[in-house]
Every structure is written in structure tokens, then in C-alpha cells.
Length: 249
Ligand code: PGA
Image (cartoon, rainbow, N blue to C red; front, side, top):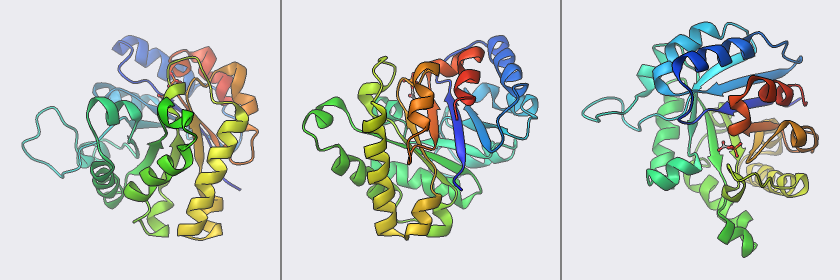
């Protein structure tokens, strides 16, 4: 059976005291059997929140890492900084970083490689802008993102990757991809993995949906055959909403 995952992406939000309270509340939630909760938090809070998140079903993730080991990269965070404070997960390729920090597929490939080579699991984000969706070429667009940043990995390495499909037009807009649209894309992604690896590898890959996931739509989305959970932005900043989403499986 595939892993079920409710991941939160706090982005650049919350003061430290708000972050600590939210983390403690989620840590105390009775997480349904077989569900994993991951919270991608701002980097200054990683160490302390990782100490608070003692629930074995709850993990803390970084939102980014640098593609080099160390050096003169002011303001950046390395894989070793993350793993040396006990962090096991990192987001790579979020559309906001692709857009605002001009992260290319090649740069993201380098980030995926350095994370995996150093024992970090990757939540790899992909997804198309509205202009591509309007042209109905979203499958090819996402296929290119995966091909150029992920499909060079061995099957063994891919086992440490979670894919998050996040159509850009649905992020922070209140517009959610319909469960049918999400399922179509997730099926297409799994098909690609099957073609590039094996059907067994594809069957084990968790694929999360992201883009305006809310308590009201989570259950319908998560019940689709190829949707293994969500990457949740806005609704993960509120303990009651995120708890409702965690309980939607
Ligand atoms: P949203 O963000 O849930 O606020 O749409 C999702 C994301 O960017 O990961």
C-alpha cells in the first residue's frame, strides 16, 4: 500500500510563537493510522520545531536547500545544515521558487541530487501555469519538469522522493483543480514513472496534490485512486483546518 501524506507548506508566514503553538497543536493530534504529516517551516524555526514534533507520525521539512555542499553563498542553507539538526525532508521545486528565484529544471536536478546523496528525502513540486492549462498541454509540461529534474535517478533513489503536483493557477487562488483534473494528472505522472522505471516503482510513488486544498475539498481529492495526499499552503497555517485535512483520508 502507498504512503498517505498530509504535508503543510507554511511559506514565509508566522512569528516564532505562532509557529511553536501551531507545531505543538499538530504534534498532539491523533493522526489516523498509516498517515504521515510533514510540515515545511521557515528555516529559522527548523531546529526548535523539530524538537517539538516528537509525534512519530509528524516530521518537519525545510522549504529549500542549496545545490552546493558549502561555501560563499550568503543567506543559503546547505544539506548538511539540515541533516545535522535532524531534518529528513526538503521541498524542491516549489513554483514560487521557480518563479521568484528563477530555479530552472537543471538547478532543481542538482538540488535533488545533493539532497538524496546526503540522506534527505525530497518533496518534488511540479505543475503548470494557467496559460499551459488553457492550451491543454499540461501533461507534456509536467512531463518535461519530471524528465529534466527527476528521471535520471535510480529506482532506489526515487524511493526517497515524494512528488507534489501543484497547478500554479490553483495555488493561493482559492481555485482548486477538480478531483477529476487532479486524478487525471496524477495518473499521467504515474504512467510516466511506470514507463521510465517499472510499474512496481510507479505503484509505490506517493503523489500529492497541492493548490487550495481545504477541509471542504480534501476528502474528495484524497479519495481519488492516484491522489495520495496533499501539499497544503494557506490551510496548513490554522491548526483546526490542517487537522481536518489530516483526518480526511
Ligand atoms: P495553497 O498553497 O494551499 O495556499 O494554495 C499550496 C502550495 O503552494 O504548496
